[in-house]
Amino acid sequence: MEGKTNELMPKHVAIIMDGNSRWATEKNLPGVAGHQKGVERAREAVEYAVKRGLSTLTLFAFSSENWGRSQKEVGLLMKLLNTALQEEAVSYTHLTLPTKA
Image 1 (cartoon, rainbow, N blue to C red):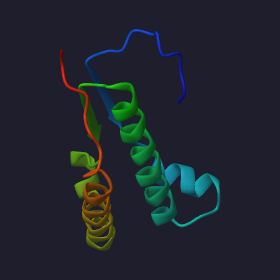
Image 2: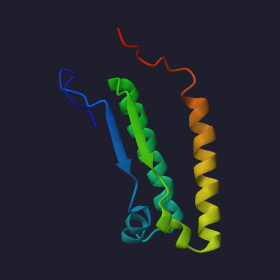
Image 3: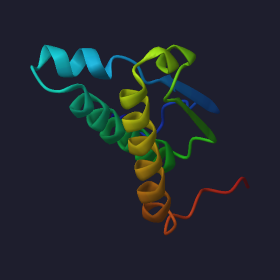
Image 4: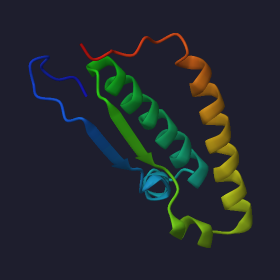
């Protein structure tokens, strides 16, 4: 995700996090491994956005279609999302976000 520092930066970037289960299936891994990889990639996106001074980053992490999954899988996804958000909130409390001049 590295780029030139003089590139134009949009004010808002939105990422649809899709395909985690497909990724895991292609690698012969359980679906949860794909979702864990998605958390890692989301972390990278947040770190990059902060580093580059992006004003707004939106991550679409759970679509309405996901509610059609089994109750067990939805529960696992919610637990993973909750855990990731709690861990990441602590991780980013030390960051100083850029202010507008």
